[in-house]
Image 1 (spheres, rainbow, N blue to C red):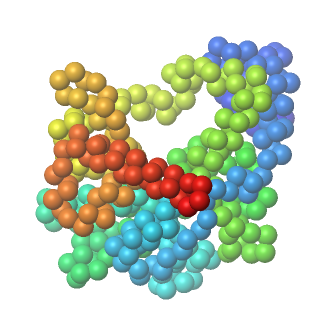
Image 2: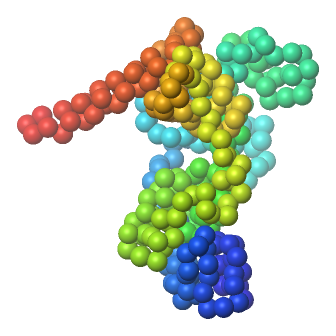
Length: 315
């Protein structure tokens, strides 16, 4: 019975017969159990793809941003502030490029905030007050985007546990060590999980057939919730895109040509963090997205050229 409930939770409706029909694809009970047996045998720790880089809670947001860039990582682990020393977790939360985008958007638009806005949002009020004093500690900005919660899984957790974490909207999870629940061996990102499933589908025809179905045919609440693409015109500014990402709770926006509606590219919170932050100028926020896209592509080309040089024979 427990296997049946687990199958239901992972895949959707269960029929009393020997076959399941998932989004129009017939899957036998044996095939389903074979999938689940494999997933239960894979440990989450085997999918670790990110190292943990910790930063003190009182570190300034500017220094935390610099560390993100120099370490070339997706997120920082923010240590628990001394005021919260009674908590069992050594980490207060995470700080990533979505939080950077939320913070920069707040900094650029704080003059539009009304007194009642600050009263209703205690953390925003704390950030604004800290900014006026000249220094914002990173723990105030940890998960400011509300897209970056800290998730923790035990050392012996399986791929099934990873599915449950990422289904809640998280993008990464810490894996505990065997020695202590307060120590961690690394981070598993959603990208690592997707890569695993991609490899699994190539080796498992029945699962590949299921994944080949159009997304809209799947009975997933998230599909209908995000039916509309969040987009901005090519003449809109970087700040316009940043505000869209913060307001809509997305990590990227599509950039379209106004007259034709042609998709040109996309701008992400990572692009904002890697280009806007190092510029150290508010003027860049007024840059049209068409120009920003060109800068993003130039940076990618430069990075590839540097990588090619670094690995060239005789270098």
